[in-house]
Image (tube, rainbow, N blue to C red):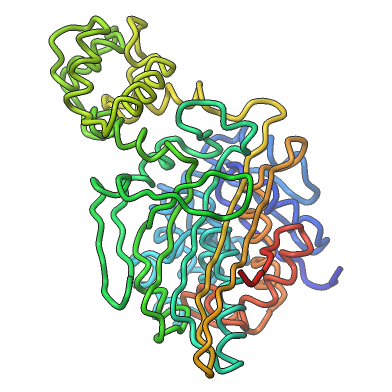
Length: 452
C-alpha cells in the first residue's frame, strides 16, 4: 500500500452499500475513515468492523454540523438520499473538500459545476452499479467500435436489483434490499428515450403497461421497461450516430402488472388522507380508497375488478390472490404510517418481503449494442453482469455499488489525473472508466462481453 500523508474520508450514511465501500477503503493504511449517521449507534455498529474507522452522529439537514465535519476531511462520500447531495456539495465548496456520490448527476448538482471548478474540488457522481458499472462497460465497447471505424446504431441497457430466482417466492417476485418506498416509486417514473430517430415519452401512469418480455440469458423470465431520461446518453456516450438509445429496468414477469394494480387501487398515493386513521383495518382502508360498497371480501373484490381493469381473468385471480397474501383485504388492524397509503403499505411490505437468512439477491445488468461496420455489415454485441449476493458477506447490490464507490474514491485520493479535474464529473470517458473498471473486476464485479 502507498505510504504518505493520511487521508481523511467522511462517509455519510450507514446503509447497505456502506460496508463494502468502507471495507475497500480501510485496506489502505493511510486512510482514516469517519462514519456519520443521524443515529450514533448505527454509525458505531458499522465503524466497529473496520480499522482506523470511527463513528459520529450527524444530521445532514444541519448546515452548521455538516460544514464542521465536512471541513475536517479530504473527501466526503454521500451515501444518504440524493435530495441531500446538493447541500453536501455546497458545504464541501466552503472547505475545499472533494465529494463522491453513487447517484445520477441531478440538475441541482450540475448547477454547482462552475462553483466546484472555482473551489478546485472534484464532485464525482454515478460511481455505483447503475449508474456506475454500466458506464464503465458502455464506454469501453463504444470506444472500441469507434476505433475500428464502426457505428453504434442502437444501444439498450437494462438493469435489475432482484431476489435470486430461488428466493423470488412472493406475488411481486421482488424483495427489498433498500427502501421499499424508493423501490416502488422508481416504478412510477416517467420515461423518455430515443427510438428510430424520434424522442418518445411515456407517462408515469402508463409506464408499467409498457413492460415487455426481454431475453437476457437462459434461466430467467424477465420483463423490461424504459426508465428515466435516456436521451442525454446519446451525447454522454458520444454516439450521435445512434437512432435508438434506451436505458431501463428489469423485473420478473408479472411484477409490473402487480405494481400497476396497486397504483390503480390507490396504494401508491403519497398525499395525506384525512380519513386514514389509527385503528382502521386493511379492508376498511381499501374500501375507502376505491369507494367499495362494503368491507367484506366479495364487495372489495367486485370493486377492485372494476377499478383495476385487469386484462383477463387469469391476471385478476393472480393479483387478487397476491393482495390476499399481503393481507391488505383482511380485517387485521393496519399500522398507519405517514398519514398516507404509500408509507402504510411500504411498512407492511418491508415486513413481508425483506431478504431472510441465507437468501441471495441478484444484480442483472445487460447492454446490447447493434453495430454497423464500415463495409455495411451489422453485428449485435452484449455485455452482461450476473452477480449473485453472498449471504455470508455482501448482497450483490451492496458489493457492486459499494466497492465501485470505494475504488473511485481511492483513485481520487491517489491523485489520479482524470479524476482530479475540478468540477462536476461522471464516468463518461475512458480516462475515468478504465482505471475504475480494472479494479472493480478484481473485486468480482465484471460484465462479460459476447457477440450474439
